[in-house]
Amino acid sequence: MLSKNQLGFLFMFMSVCAFSVMDIIVKWSVDYPIGQVLFFRGFFGIVFYLFVIPRDRLHNFYVTKRARLHFLRCLSGLIALISIFIALRSLPLATVVSISFAAPIFTTIFSIFLLSEKVGLYRWLAVLVGFVGIIVITEPGISSLNIYYVFPIIFCIGLSYVAIAIRQLSTSEPVWLISFYFSLSIMLLSFFTIPQGWIMPDFNDFLLLSMIGIFGGVANLWLSQSYKYSEVSLVTPLKYLALVFAIIFGYLIWGEIPTLKTLFGASLVIISTMIIFRREIYKKKTFASEKFND
Image (cartoon, rainbow, N blue to C red):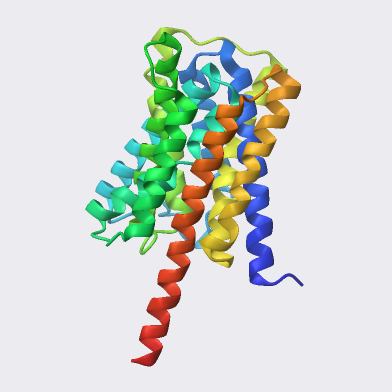
């Protein structure tokens, strides 16, 4: 019988694997319009979540009293998803994954303004180190290629607000409902891209495209389960396995070899996020100790 922490590690590992497979398929799907890929992500995500809705909620599973916050979560999530899809198609896999690790940096900044959290010296230092890492990876300049480096950064910003919104929604909303509305918003948005032209996939491509939605839905659920069973700070380091997977599959499938600056920049970003998460667990322990003493 596994302990709660072991279950948390297992679910996080499976989540990282599922997200990595989804990223690979998205990068492979470059011959299909982004809107069409979004449809498969949304539709098959919905299909998956229909199987996890509790039976006693099937008749009114869609009911919510926080429609505005759901809308903001979906909007920011759509911006993040479209940005990461564009980035995956235009940049090396390891580069995109490396920059995506910067999301906690922006979450820290948003938490100041949206959650009125106080951020100390260590976390500001982490933010600074993370931004240096991003600059090292993206090498801001005049080159037209650098425009694509903006998209994983937009993804981080969008994902950061998503984290804030989910934190607020999860106080009253079940995880499957939050994810269901997001998948629904993805599918609805994809319909607006039909006039731009969709390509009829063959059977094999249809299966692969449908896997984007299934793996995306499963990965989100496993991620939530991981955080349910174990503390965020304990399981989050497993996310960095995604960079290892990206380097391996990027090389095996597309012949991509990460540059030293990408690896160095990724190291700075990882260090910064680790500082943030270590400070989070320290704050929790301090708060718990003070509460106990009171």
